[in-house]
Image (cartoon, rainbow, N blue to C red; front, side, top):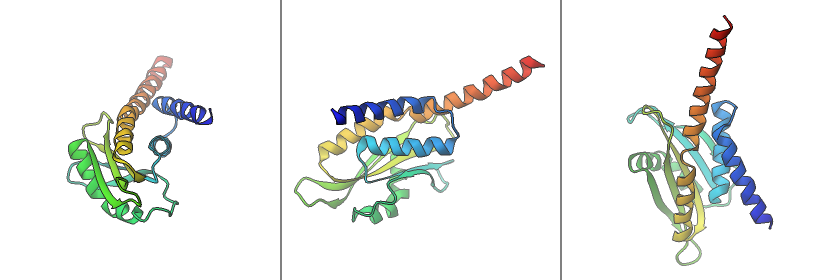
Length: 172
């Protein structure tokens, strides 16, 4: 029952993110945390770039203080390449290190998020440790279901600003 309640709480947090009222830095921090919990990631990074030729910048992260996974350093080194591949193809899966059991591995998973701004690309990258291929596939499917949350947040922010402007002019 506790896992059902925890999952329900997670889905409620995802729903609240769609109409999140705080600034973008707070949104990305919460999105990274929620998405990390959803896929049970060891480590998560959210990266953004403005144009195809520019450098990737980190806008959110989760699990950085964990030291358990040996593949974490490799994951961190490969972030720009993984981000570029996810941006180009929509997603990326990369086995970083074989797991202790057959058919299990530490895997990097990346997904391009929908942000509605043609000039910016945002990708979610996660390190999943000691997971089966089915678990990686399920994680990718779960992330795909929430990939539109950033777009909904940004749209709500734009609408909120427009409503504020309308109120200002209607008072005059």
